[in-house]
Image 1 (spheres, rainbow, N blue to C red):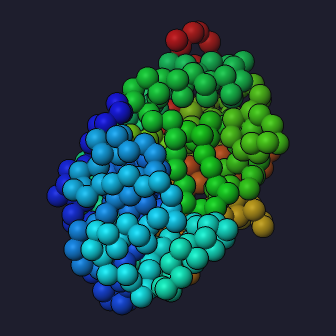
Image 2 (image 1 turned 180 degrees about the vertical axis):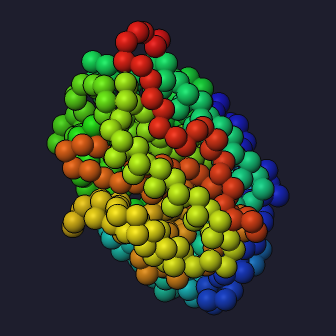
Length: 406
């Protein structure tokens, strides 16, 4: 993306802001101050260091600390001003005719405590409450504009998967292959940053893992972890050499103009043991049944329980989404500008699916000491069920060991 490129039109921003204003009015919130980078991009179409004030009625005010010229070029909002210090926010609001709010909404799910106390002093006449759930629920249902962006990202996910077959060779280390695949992704437009909302979570493109290394758990909220290159990272591709007859997991996110597509496929050099192929087919069965059931009105937690039951009925309950205490208690997640959006297909979740939600569904089997099989696709929720936006074959891609695939 070149500097100054406007990704979303003004009409798109206005629809989002109106939805938030409606949610604010339902909670008697006089104004919302957006500070988190992804939410700022969602409502103002810029990721510069800025603060977006949205009143319960009327036009928003974008106050930019750095860089003002870039923010003005990127955002379609009408009122964009320079900000010298966050302490000046109340003064600027007053100068621009805003009634000082009795209740201010902020993203308290991600706001650091020290910054929270700073804002408490700045808004000493107001009470600050958490507005993050309302924001995340609005973001969960995608517009046609967003769906098209994610569809484009999904197409590029498929291209990355196709490139793996050309680069995969025995003897390469995971991190060597990962670098080659990631370099290709970058060359076709990957933005390089994969944003997550959960504190302490981070991801660099995704996981490219082989054999037993793929089943090594990590701190990340994911059924796969990987050895990584050091304890400083603690996840992802490591220095293990890729060999024949083992599952190779390529679980990558493509990030295009902010929007994400999540995509996992299994590759193998030579062959895979029959029991691993059978387990993979079971994951495809679970995926396909969930695609039929995940219609508007379906309860996210009930879909999770259905998937867990299907895995148990097929004899994979002990290894589904992890093993023992390492088991992950979700089988899918919303995706958009962040990798961990609403809804979560997870235990105890009550959120009902709505048309226009985007879900990454990821049933996987983890075999410690052997590897991982399974699938992940990015889907659109429709009246007919889930429509997969990623199209690369779900089957295991088996390549010959001999020969050069470059």
